[in-house]
Figure (cartoon, helix red, strand yellow):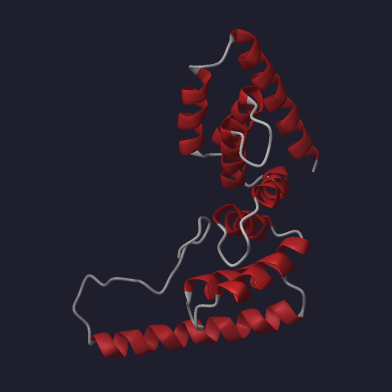
Length: 190
């Protein structure tokens, strides 16, 4: 499984026809080196390294795929304040992967990541409000999170914002815009 926010992976394709077994072994050994260094950094409490170990276990890159181990690493990194790990933990709860599905727990982790400025988490949180999943449905709140995610570079969130806007009243849109400003100010303050 490939989670959002992950920019690498072992499923690389080549534009030439190399010796595939040799190429695979080289690639496998390189990821093994990354795992070794991420573990060392994780022992020192590096949240990004811990989060990356979660991704490696989640995707079976450099290690044997182990979703429960991935959840363990994501939780450790999330507790250290890593927004990417918070988002991935939210995905795990949202989809019931490696944990028992829990929409409220997914919302909790999406919100934590979103409040740290993670645009994808903002978009997913907006989706939870738009659909009333794990929270009481609220079009203005959904609009606000989609809007802030769009302002932070999420093209998909901009599309969702524009779609939900079509079914909102002018008062709801005004409330959503007000909430967008409040959210942006809160994120800027850290």
